[in-house]
Image (cartoon, rainbow, N blue to C red):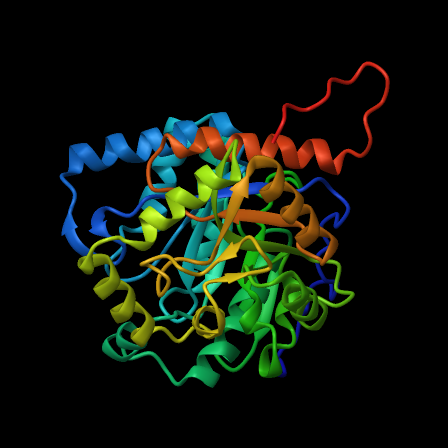
Length: 374
């Protein structure tokens, strides 16, 4: 009988991803209702057309992948992953899964199968679940137990993508489990995990994950948080942030003010979501919003959907790009842009990404073109 946590295969951790690699940008798939998590459902034909337009514009804008959320009122993220794989050439699905509702072998096999069939990396955002109501209605264990299960889940999924796994823990037992086909290093599943889960009893989580997720906060707060959560682990950190950008800063702020005046239905949906949320990232988001609608000059908490959406960077293309550079200097290696209001916004997001890359590449050299004005 193996002792708890025994690993009869190699006892090495995954090689850390290259923390010095260029920043990657990720998008979020649109929800199928009129309000995120609430509202009337969109007609299937209309939703598929909307999804394809978002994916096409995200790929054109230079995004590397798309996050697929997972909660009871959302469409199944594995099914949506196949839409991404069929309708785009390069976007990598980031499938959100709840460790309390799946077996790690099943999740690892699905990811390996889709990667094999479509020749593209399938990434996983492994979470404990943020909805108080959903956790209660689905009979989830208490929060601390859920987090311990998540730690074991992540380790098993990570190891299955590269080796034969034997494991005995508190929640899972495996004896010589092997997946086929084996993933090559460039196709191996990468794991994203919320930074709020990287504390206390889940100290092992960062060792088995490639990306820590965090939500935008003032730059100084992000620096402190990522130092605590990531430390010297070598993993990357992807920061979720909304963006409202235009050629002129005042034009961007005018759009933000229009968003602040959104309808009663959206505000009600945001309040419901906020009251039900267990995520420490969302809790901090709401605390920051109470401290002021604008922080660090560009970080805006005034959206009608602040209980659902993350804060947004508002300004000119150059201003927003420079602030992303500031976040990168504070430890954020990659960025997930919150879902834009419509697919036309990707053109503006692409200009932010372009300016960011110009700033990140350093001073111009002979033969380089100067960027367009902010």
